[in-house]
Length: 228
Image 1 (cartoon, rainbow, N blue to C red):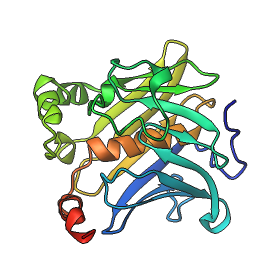
Image 2 (image 1 turned 180 degrees about the vertical axis):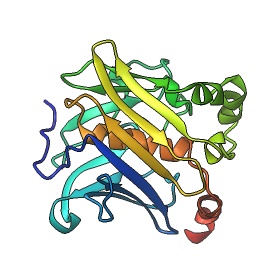
Image 3 (image 1 turned 180 degrees about the horizontal axis):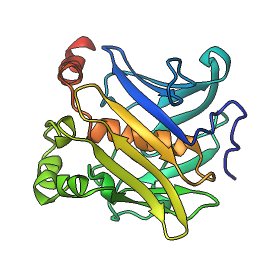
């Protein structure tokens, strides 16, 4: 059984997502093209890399909880699975990935080109680079740095990065991470079957692995002291 899509969940084919990093929470907001008011908001307790799931709010005044999202997947408001994001780079089968805790293991790789998006009723969508610059960004050197667990600025600060999640019989969706210090993503959904909550899940995974800001790193590094 999979979660049904709530009526208030925006079925946008294109949108902008921004990430706000605060001392006690992280907020991802979704805007239709040209809009200044968000149509969806994801909120989690803690800093950017805190191991916590996001609550998804939609509907009038963004007060309706329409699911829970994490870097490894999404569930509906009633807890029914929507799908998973396999972050293992192929070392773990999809059936072993939990939508809420699959990002909390040592097998997770920080290379978005190796992730898979798996949603019932659709072929699995595999990550690939949308341009040459993105393909060159994720190479053996950056992979080694990621395995060491060193949070370092990504080349995305200087140039956009484009990630495509597609299958042979599905155009899937594309996420373009804007260059600069302010985390912002442009999303295009080409397959109407894609549940937008799965796109949000990939965005939260990208937030952990490709977003680097001075403010975010300071908040992350001081989090243990604020809890004592």
